[in-house]
Length: 451
Image (cartoon, rainbow, N blue to C red):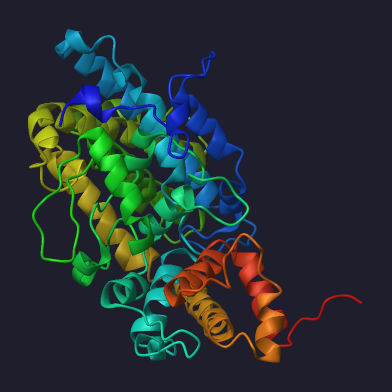
């Protein structure tokens, strides 16, 4: 791969107008603005990050998380582009100088495909088909046209993945909308595909980058940007990552791990001593002394944690920039393995692992977090059961009532079974936690609209 080809401001769906429009905003800044003003982005404010949203103590939701990831991503992109332009002066006329804007926009979009109720929502959808009440669809034959789900389409459902769903949301031609979805630039779109392979290669981790319906779109982007296709089993598709994916991933890794620790402290899941010990662990002794001295000027405990958190994020950002630059050749060759965090210096890497261990032991298994996951499973499973039944048997009176609730942009009445099921997933995954819960209560007769 080469930087000249990897960074293109060509827009999906507007290829014939490429290079026509000129104004003070770059195309990549336009991507960022388009996402900020979009309805799916606004809905992230009512989607769970880790902790339940209601409560007197404000914690992160998907919206605040995405904004913070975008901020760190911008820093990573700017630092990388500055260093690479010094190293490769021949690239001074390229779009490499806009890496910060590209990575920042991709970071804004990275969680757009996540369903309600955090990562438990993803698991609820996948297991509904693989081991739940949706398993009947594997062998179902549409009596009107004989259509069935093939093996690759079934893999999309049982491995449902928020990253693949984000790519679909940004690129799919929904009814009544323009071709090209959000009409984003090719490079911004490629930068969010963390797992650039099809669902039949998802394996035990259930991770992949695009549904069967979006494979032609990703192939077009990969060909335009010169992203190489890798050898894979027959009937599957695998590419190497776009280099900027590593920066988006690093920004996400930095923010969710460190901000979860801060939230856990606010919620008193972690003590102040535990939190300070975890965050100071990222630094060598001399740097720790300097930080401790600065902490003496702040008496507010929460502000002390904020200061420590900012020091840690700055440390990890610098470490990830160094790893990227040191491994530029391997990244461009598609041979770099793992994520940037895996290759940082020993002291911060060990501290990061300690935060991971603490998070799994005390945060992700806390009663409040588990309760929201249990509730999310029940809500999403019920909605999926009713909606999949409705689109397979639309002639039933109750099915018609459910279908009439669905926005017209979702092609619930599509001819192909796969397209109808995907429309159901588009509808449900786009819901906020509150909307999904409200609909669940109304369907079950627990809540009635005012008459």
